[in-house]
Length: 139
Image 1 (cartoon, rainbow, N blue to C red):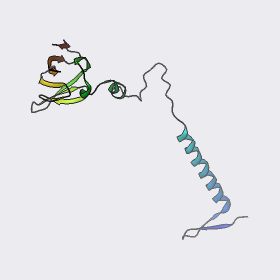
Image 2 (image 1 turned 90 degrees about the vertical axis):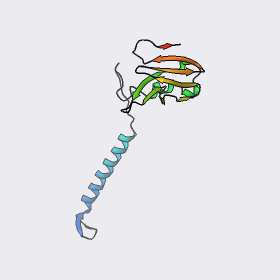
Image 3 (image 1 turned 60 degrees about the horizontal axis):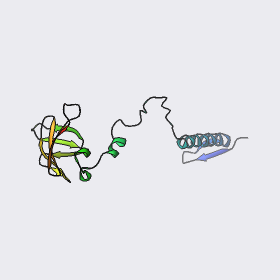
């Protein structure tokens, strides 16, 4: 026995059985999406690097000190040097950008070279060379 069900203004007629089957399928599909969302994905590395973890940033950044918290030259890492088209130079120290004459805390930048920076740390002068270049820190 089929009954007519009027839906909306167009007076579309469907059987109650068809309506109930469609509603049931909709409920099943909706509940399966809820189950998928609740499952957390676990990456099994099998000895390989997790591709979802950034190579730089989070883990390494937390270990570096802010220039305001630096106590000695040993706390400073020269991470990069930038020169713009106009020849203005910027040094990246402990993740912070500083120009010549700039500074933070006990750290002041005296001069920025092509591969090194001359710093004043607590009043003492040091030359810090980019990683991978010959040298390191010299007084």
